[in-house]
Length: 293
Image (spheres, rainbow, N blue to C red):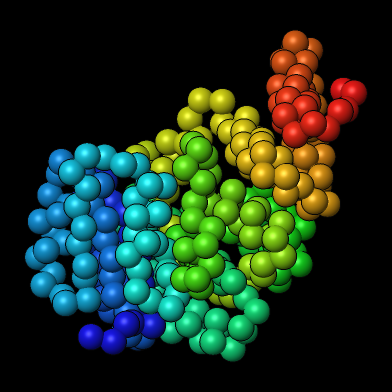
């Protein structure tokens, strides 16, 4: 069989509650030249049974015998994807019927674009519209996204469609615990790749108590975006890939650490700043570069 134009990539772990709506929203797309690659990450509920019940030849179901987690499952799917483009999809969201058609058209018309995202319309567990994500709706062009990403993420992961060649080259960083997508967008921008956004809500993004977004925001949620950028910088430094974009990322990290410390003890700021600077110093020494910090 000829390779499809698009691989829709989804990983699911015990997601049967919203899974039917998510799958149906892909199978009912106006664009139909796709394979739907679903990684069942060792679910213990009826997720796999529900997926098989559709009986659609476009669905390719792969089951992990042991749980690998989202990042490793997505990297596994990227390696297996046959499409020219890879569209991300989560098991609790809903894609509007024209999503794939519009994103394929955009990438076809803009060969220099590596990733095209779209707006995300946030909804609650019952499907009711809730407050939107400001950073998402305030950024559209590649330049706006490029300027925003060093501060904070502004690209909703399940809205994205990537060129498969780019996805296979970069993959997701498996040492990123919370925001593997933000790390990927940073690496792409640092290397001069273009991320664009369609100025239209093409996905309904569900926020609920068991969603990855909600779970990741538990605990010291303010420091987690900082940690993502710290790990990104550590990886870049290790590979000696630091450039002006990375320095901008580092400047915003330090600014955020100082801002967070304003409402806490000075020891908090000292510990975090020391963590950043000592890590940089160790990496520079490793490559024989002296620096006084």
